[in-house]
Amino acid sequence: MLDLEAILLSLKLALWTLIFLLPFGVWVGHALSKSNPYKSWIEALLALPLVLPPTVLGYYLLEGFGGRSFLGIPLVFSFTGILIASLIVNLPFVIQPIQRAFEAIHPEIREAAQVSGLSSWQTFRLIELPLAWRGITSGAVLTFAHTLGEFGVVLMVGGAIPGETKTVSISIYDKVQSFDATGAGMLSLLLLSISLIAIVLSYGLLGTRKKWAY
Image (cartoon, rainbow, N blue to C red; front, side, top):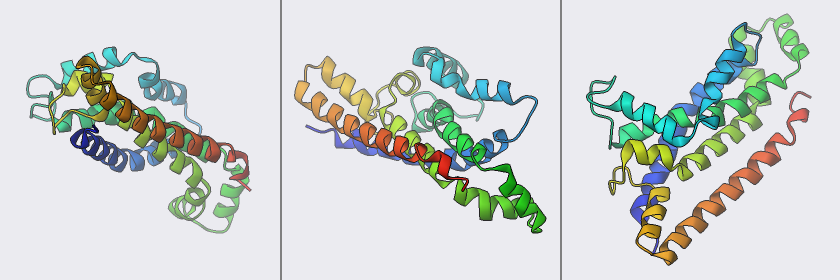
């Protein structure tokens, strides 16, 4: 049987992660598409969640969220805690596709906009954003799908509190532990389907990247 409560919680987590992270990803991705003496260091820092084991990242988050935390409220074993953890874990998934999309815009297009008298904000809003929309869409899709399937960090920071921190991936783990193969299989198939669709969509959008600047 599908764990509807866990599914709804995962969708809620993925939606809020996307709402908070997508505007930030557009801002950072646009900034990193330009020359910067610290660009390599910033990119490496933002890419850490891709290479760090979830247990390592979860441990540091658990230490940082302990007690009253930096927000002055307890974050461990709470939805707010797993949301903040999700924002950190998903940074590379949203920023990298968006950055590559902005980098694919030919410099002559920006120069033409400046010659036409457009301000930096007008160039960004009227020219760069429309040209980078495929990368932005790809980043959004990858972030949403990855949030739905995140397990290690969410488990360490939030535990498995029904209705509060027990997401679909944790529900699958619990069902396997309780030998509920049918329930685990149905939830796994759901996440597999969503992940496959997200990857196909993302690859399809990124595959046409070379056409974005023309």
